[in-house]
Length: 105
Ligand code: SF4
Image (tube, rainbow, N blue to C red):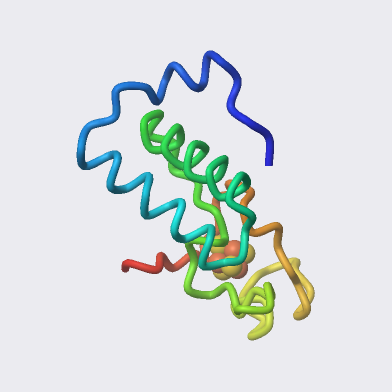
């Protein structure tokens, strides 16, 4: 996962207390999913930028259908058109997926 550019970083400065809490949650989500601290930090930055930009994409790491081993359970059940049943998505890439179900939903 790439670092934010300086322009992107400026877009997430001045976080409110609520945003700081959310950023911390994103970092924890990354760490619970065994991302190295630096990668988890980049994930949190990327997701905060997404939120600030009102981007509607999500990362698989935020989806309840991502199995602990990294497989997509929707694909395994044949509910992800065009994907093999062994599909292991890149967990941190942002995407629009009709089968996404958020962890907090
Ligand atoms: S259902 Fe979609 S968002 Fe969820 S893990 Fe599978 S590919 Fe990712």
